[in-house]
Amino acid sequence: MGIVYTEITLKNALDEGNARAGLIKADDIRTATVTAVVDTGSMNLVITEELRQKLGLNVKGEKPARIANGQRVTCQVTEAVEIHWKNRDIVLPAVVIPGAADILLGAMALEGMDLMVNPTTREVVGAHGDEIEFMAY
Image (cartoon, rainbow, N blue to C red):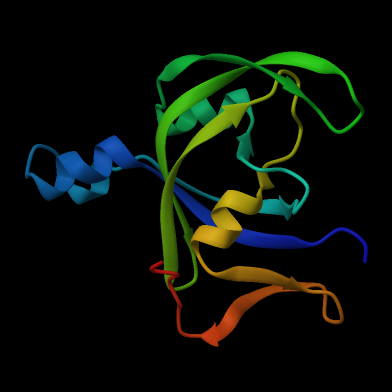
C-alpha cells in the first residue's frame, strides 16, 4: 500500500482543561499541526522529543518498547495529548522514541476516532463515513 500521511493537530490536554476552567487564555494552549505517518502497525501516537518540548508535555514515565526494526529501546510516555483530525478528536498519551524523526499516528488513535486507511486512495477516511460511530458495547 505504501506510506500514508495525514495532517493532525496536537494540543496539550492539560492546557485545554486549564483554558476551559478559565485559568489560561485559549490562545495560550500549546498546539502544533503536523504531518504524521499513519502507522497501523503501531499502537501509539509517537512524537519527537522536539515536539514534546514544544507542546510542553511532561513525561509520566518510561517503558520498554520494541520498534519497527526489532530493536528494544526505552521510551518516554507523556501526559495526555489531544489529537485532532478534521472533525474528530481523542485524548491519549504520546510515546517519545529516542531519535524518532517522524510523528506516527497509531492504531489506538485511529480506532478511537473511527478512522481507517483507504488502501485504494492511500488516505485516511472515516471508517463509517463522515459521522463518527462509537462502539458502545
